[in-house]
Amino acid sequence: MTKRTASHTSPGGPGRPGGPGAHMFGEKAKNRKGTILRLISYLGKNKLVLIMLVVFVAVSSLSMVYGSTFQKSAIDAITIDSGRLHIDTEALFRSLLLLCVVYLFSILFNFLQGFLGASLSQKTVRSMRNDLFKKMSGLPVRYFDTHAHGDLMSRVTNDIDNVSTTLSQSITSLFSSAMTVTASFVMMLVYSPLMTLITLLGIPLSLLATRVVAKKTRFYFKKQQSSLGKLNGHIEEMVAGQKTVKAFNREQISINSFEAINEALRDSSIKAQIFSGMVGPIMNVVNNITFVLVAISGGLLAFGDFGVTVGTISAFITLSRQFTRPINEIANQYNAIQSAVAGAERVFEVMDEESETDNGKIIMNPEEVTGHVEFEHVNFSYVPDKPVLKDFTLDVLPGQKIALVGPTGAGKTTVVNLITRFYDINDGIIKLDGKNINDIRKHDLRRSIGIVLQDTVLFSGDIYDNIRFGRLDATEEEVEHAAMTANAHSFISRLPEGYKTVLSEEGSNLSQGQRQLLSIARAVLADPKILILDEATSSIDTRTEMNVQKAMISLMKGRTSFIIAHRLSTIRDADKILVINDGRIVESGNHEDLLKQKGAYYTLYKTQFANE
Image (tube, one colour):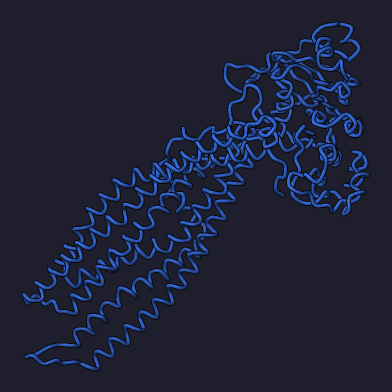
């Protein structure tokens, strides 16, 4: 299932790095040789297809090269002696027939190699996509909080597509070029070492021109890909926040920002195309000069009675063309190759990121978890030297409802991020049922925790699919029971398709409250022993909140619950309310006791909740 709800480009909270364009133009260029070797290693994963492709390419290339011998024989079968034309008819027709057979044979194998080349390239790209997505799924939350989502999407789509297109178009051509160049060179040496030497004179000049242009081309293609990632990030951000943009009349500012990024993309793209386009014309000039020199030298050798015939000259010219043509083809594909290498670099950058680690060895059965959570002198910071939690100590008994309140940036969401181990603490210890959570397998730990967020996350598919996301092996009866517990069954039943209703983009065919009830039903189905409600009712109206509140009360029964909320109705009945400020617990108690103290909670109540 694919995510339906829009996500923020930079979901980083207070004190977290990140934002649009993070890690874009500051990226260091990676080793091109290393990138190419890694691409080759991916090709090597399909050894059978690769071997068959090499064989077919070799047969096709050698057939084309060997055809020059029959061309030589056919021309040499026609001679002029004492002003009279002599034709060895038998030799001529035999040579022409063999030439046709060789070329037909080459065409057949050329078709087969095209088929295998396409198969190999697509299998390779599929493997890369799988590895990249698997890698991204294993990256820690910190990575997504500090990288623009649009850029990550660009790497999965645009950069992989560049690699796919180039491999499809170039992989067979590169193999064929290598075979053709080698075979042509050997045959040229057989015909005339001197003319072969003349042909080779143009290669150093071609390589020098290619090397000079290559540095500039690769730089601008890398910059082009980075600019494209930044553009995608801006587009995603603007589409997700379009209501906010319109509400504040910031359309023109958004357009101006887009134009600036688009202009940077245009500039880098133009320069990349210009430099890559220079290689082909330079190679053509060098090859034409070489062709003239070969023709002149061949004529002189023929007149000088050095054993060089007209057929030899004709065959050699054909071979020299076959020798230089692959180099020209590579030059003409230089644009795509450079773009693919730049894209592959960006893909491998993500693959080289450090995955989320799990050193936990304790296997914990979620059904046996009681929900006793302890924080002991915990210190944590998202950014070094900027602490978010300071000597944080808390003891939550099984089944208790704990409300976390305080100003923005105080550290409320950080507390739940640490419980789930989305982030790991710097100092101190967090325990679950007396066990250090760092020693518990993350899979088991997170299976014991259910989360309901302010921004509902719905996926493509029907309502059944979205609720069943909480437990994939649940039956339809269990899904419906969870919906009843979450007070969602009644509105689902009124839908034309009921539980089979397919959600539209971002679940827009449901109200915000209905979407929230589905997320609660999902949590009910998962049956966690620890529940986290992060601003679960802040984005819905008061009337809808009553239904959601009833659902949350049912959900919290018998579960250790952490509630982050600003609305009084969601925390008034909490067993303990913690007022957090500047990373510390400044007050603790139930609603009535804290009001009597007339301290920080009383001030928050008067300023934020008095009008409810």
